Image (cartoon, rainbow, N blue to C red; front, top):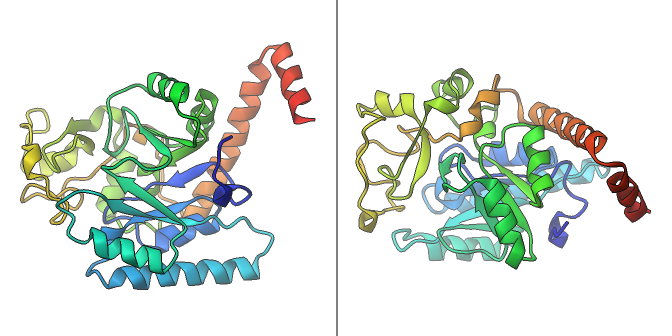
Length: 303
């Protein structure tokens, strides 16, 4: 596993909670890190700009105190997401704040990072169109660093599947919208529980970048989810949050295709314990199906 040193021995399960516009705040990030996965938030969620320093200081302080009181626990580092686009007039300021406060991990959007995040078909929010089976294996041919897979991952079986394909970490977003700590309207959480993959629409209308959204929220905004026009990419504006009066992610709710597995909105700690049990069960079931020679080789490598 090609994990950066900062993530070795600090994760309960190999998961990054992806940055969710509006939804991710200190409460969600702190809960994720305390439970042993990387929590993250978009820098632009902290508004006005000076609030970013307050959030980072609070997150670092609470995680440090928790780790000191519970040295036996795996407390994961947190990450801040930067939108690296010309329309983001806060980028320079936010990078300076993150540098000054020594944020452990930076996640970049719309610009390649040092590690690769494969955003495949089915991912919530901004998403690709390639199958993870095609994308991960192709990337592994030329890239030797950490590979992080995103796209319709909502349970422990999805996490195990991502690693079985060759990814090092699973990147999960939509599942954490439906949690107690998420800064999301109750109606949004209820929609994630109520609807399924067939209720997702793929469009670039709302931000200029193609993404997956809950069709009922599109309809509620007065639009026909089955007949959405193409956006003008030259008018992408991440400083204002979108291209239209109806704003993604405030009015138009992002969602991955994996929502069929979402049945509740528990506290983060409870959800991660469940994900861990499912992940272990999936790995055990996979091992039981492996050929005998593969099991022998695996045990020999472990010794």
